[in-house]
Amino acid sequence: MAQFFDKFSNDYKTLLDESLKLTGFDTSYFPTAKIKTLARLFPEFGRQPIKILDYGCGTGSLYPPIKKFFPQAIYQGTDLSDKMVQEAQALNNGADVFHAMKSQQWRQGAYDIILAANVFHHIPHTEHVSILKELRSLLTRQGKFILWEHNPWNPFTQKIVKDCVFDEDAVLVSPLQSKRLGRKTGFSKMRIVFTTFFPKSLAFMTVLEPWLEWLPLGGQYLLVAENPDSEK
Ligand SMILES: C[S@@+](CC[C@H](N)C(=O)[O-])C[C@H]1O[C@@H](n2cnc3c(N)ncnc32)[C@H](O)[C@@H]1O
Image (cartoon, rainbow, N blue to C red; front, side, top):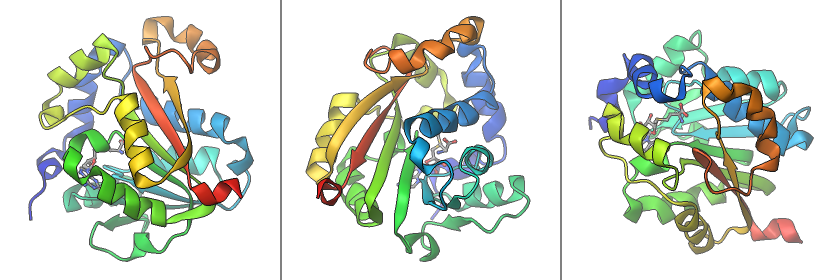
């Protein structure tokens, strides 16, 4: 069945660049910035042969920075859109790490990190909990689930989403909704980390981000959630 993102797979980067104009950054900035933030939040994973699942990997833009900041990580990516998966392979030298949703390969957990970056606002909200439950079952005992989302409380984010052609289907997920979803899924030890505060013209202030994680005005945020088992 054709998926919504199939029609954007060939010019995804161009369309994303267009929608990001307001920030002053282009698409090359955000994947690295995201994974740099993850490496800062989880320094213990930086030098270990961990397993990472990139759920809704799109064109695989997070794969190169993951290889850089988590050099020993074993990466697997999957996406609902087969065309996005094919594009991810093509853009990453045919790397055999991107799998169609129907493949069983990415379902061979257990993952230390499962990351869903800017994916859940494209998924009907009625499907969230069942998908999260499956992802939760693929985590190791100490594994971290990261839901990375646009922050609907930031007016610039709202504008960017409104103007972005492939966000036509988007229904943003607020930090409070994320936490509620996490609770329904059975996650524990949840925390919200706000990020992406500054446009390119103020990029020198990005060093302040670790002190602003509590401030609900970041353009994006992460829900970090763990299995209750990890408390034992
Ligand atoms: C905005 S893109 C983000 C891609 C990538 N995570 C990134 O950060 O560059 C959203 C992706 O989510 C995928 N997607 C939508 N619904 C999905 C679902 N139910 N399961 C997995 N992926 C899904 C789309 O096909 C698309 O590739």
